[in-house]
Length: 95
Image 1 (cartoon, rainbow, N blue to C red):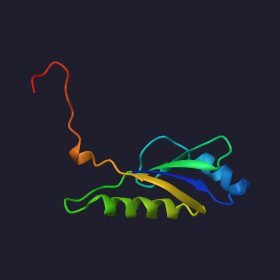
Image 2: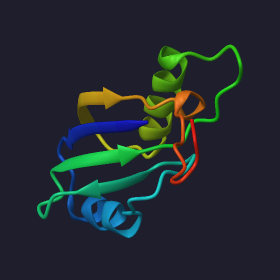
Image 3: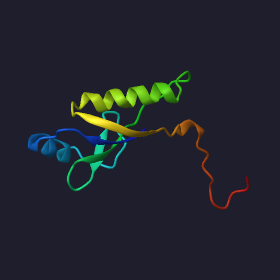
């Protein structure tokens, strides 16, 4: 899951906390990348999916992970990539 948004009213302590957990990795607790002013962000979150989970379930779980960080924000875009549907093409192999 990738959520793009903006922080609302982030103070100096909040900026420092966001910068401390900044990472481009996808983790279950989520990680932020942000612009230089720490006003716009991208939140990356790995959401384990069960056989009956759909994109809406994943989006809700990712938004809950974002909320758990406790920073006031506005969500601008949510993108879901279901890794169960990705096909890997191997070089040099017949398809």
